[in-house]
Length: 226
Ligand code: NI
Ligand code: MN
Image (cartoon, rainbow, N blue to C red; front, side):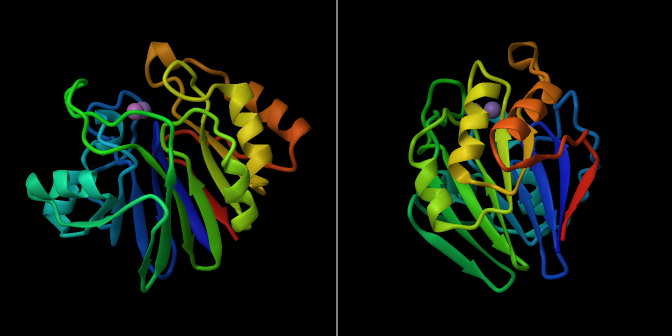
């Protein structure tokens, strides 16, 4: 059983009896975040270093000593800023006592000041307490999502729908189909004007065209994956 807590934008806390995993914790400066920052995660995952994903990860790692796991260059970057980190890279799997995390590609950039690249963006398949959750990060649709769906029985896919910088609604529906996920939660929409999207439109389309059931969460809400 895993509780999926939506913190706004692409930030999630995955809570099980075995451990807590915080993903892309953009809380400070997030106009839609409704979360206190006193998390005590066991692991922090960061898909790339754009500010709306790296977010408060370094500060939370410094405070709690929870390691940040990401691709090699991103892990080294957060280490250089004082965070604890565990590096990895696309294709590899981190095995922890309470979870395993496999890193997959994302078609997107990764820069600290809008110019200077730090590694590459990624997505994660997170297996914990018998459930499999895919966090797509920021990405365009890509055909290898079909391979991810073949390798894993995905229970939940967290997919961007806001367009402009990532997939929009129609490509996210195609992603849900390729991943063959049982459930989907839309993310990365309505935080800024450029990424306005209607989650109800996504719900209608994804539920009519795929097997997925769509869960729309407001920031602060949770869904129990039982
Ligand atoms: Ni980004
Ligand atoms: Mn983003």
